[in-house]
Length: 252
Image 1 (cartoon, rainbow, N blue to C red):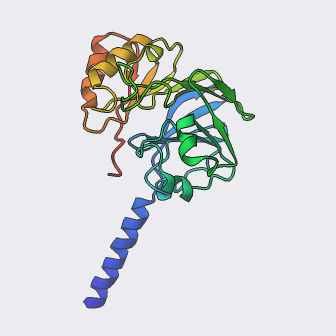
Image 2 (tube, rainbow, N blue to C red; image 1 turned 180 degrees about the vertical axis):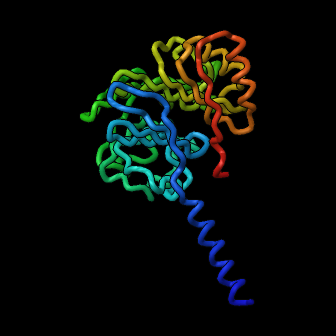
């Protein structure tokens, strides 16, 4: 009986370890003229997109094991230097030997050229295109009213708009409902943050999203917030945006 109990305990430990490193479940975020964009939520502000042979990591955290089973990164997008977005331990554990690492200057000041085979520092408003056909536009992300002592001062971090074939994907980073977000056009998929006190509440997020009306919106970075209220407020605004509520905290 002792032997059986020991073997059972070992089996449970192995199962737990395998579960912790199991590949996250993917879903099609949108279809492009060059194939689907597949989304893999990781946790909080971290996720992975796969498209046309390209694997894009966004603010990778949670340790390299959280990315087991996913493709090697071709592009890493870093929004800013807060610890729930910039995690040296995770970056150091990932295979970034072929990765282009895109970041604002504030992140470059923290990590230099330590990760990836190449780095691109982008200011708000700049656009680059990779050889594989990925367009990357750096968007502002900041708190309102803008101030130097805000959690996220204007110009300190980047949101991003990706162009993948004929589709445009917006990644908000940590921001409030700023004019630059509200003025976006032709966004097919949006990832929009909403948590207090660092970004905005669900009501402000819904109001901002209603202004630019993406085809699809995923609330993310929403710890402690009721995203059903965001969905309901957006429905009340009568815009043709599909709200996809997903569990970004299953790994907690």
